[in-house]
Image 1 (cartoon, rainbow, N blue to C red):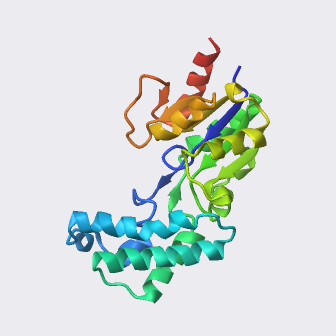
Image 2 (image 1 turned 45 degrees about the vertical axis):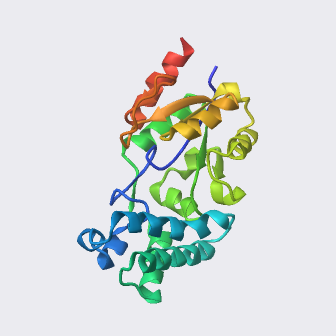
Length: 233
């Protein structure tokens, strides 16, 4: 019997308006796609890795101010390493926009409908997501925060999926055995980690993930009820 459902957020319940979580419209105001294309792809990959290292090493944070500071550094490091024009003021503007402006995240209309229906059917709902403190006001802005019974965010633990500690934290908060829960995510490595603890995986193919024969998959969130129904049979 499935009584609880954990959701990833990005590429599962919501999407970035530009197609990239970091390269926002505010970023594009200063660095167009054409300007970015002048950077050697190998150098761009190096710049992304260089900028992301501090985010990974110092991920346990609690405030929006800390997040804005971290991302100010991220944009500075990225653009300096890539050899693209940037000033501290520009990096700060982009980081503040990413931290405090939430219309850039798209929640498909079917998502609130799905969450409302699942709650009405008696399911406990939770989130397990790699993210930063701005996710809470962003979910409030989208109007879907009240649907969730428990939240496990990477920044709370200072760890990223597929670390099993995130799944254990989520199970403890939900108060259900792993075998009575489902986890919906778009990354195979995360589903493998969840399955190792006894959680039932469902692969989200909203962003083009290739279906995996090991698990059921959904192309849109609205398909989840049919998967849950099949699990009962």
